[in-house]
Image 1 (tube, rainbow, N blue to C red):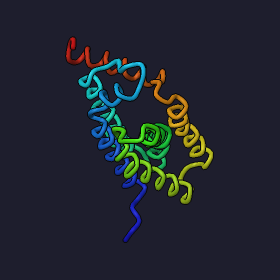
Image 2: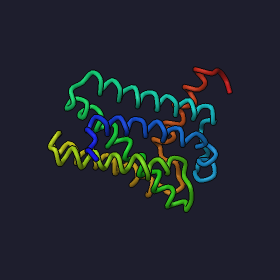
Image 3: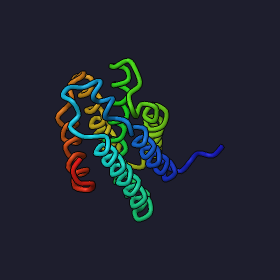
Length: 178
């Protein structure tokens, strides 16, 4: 069995992210059951935001892989995939452990995103495709999200509330009043 190219791994992560966003489809009732304050957006608004994030994620992946060199694509996609997506994926795992049950997004996090992104990190470091300090910085950034989630417990963080407000504004703008 041959080793997949780094570009193939980047595509796989992009598609895994789309699946992750789809797994979060029923996020609002879960948030309402586990967090204070109550969610500041509706199912429609959350789903609008999830579709937007999925489209932006796969669109940016496609742009980077089609228009940039391999190194350029890595430098563009590693901050997204390691700094943001990995941090978010580990956050879902922290929530599943903290709340002792299913957290929307945990299956794709545990079985697709975390393994694929860690595999990518190992490959990038082993093959010296980008500076190790760049990867280390991104891993530190990724650790902030799950650490914050663990410390916050059942209190919704300011950044999460800001995303909810963004979703509510986007939903109202696209679809009109609730």
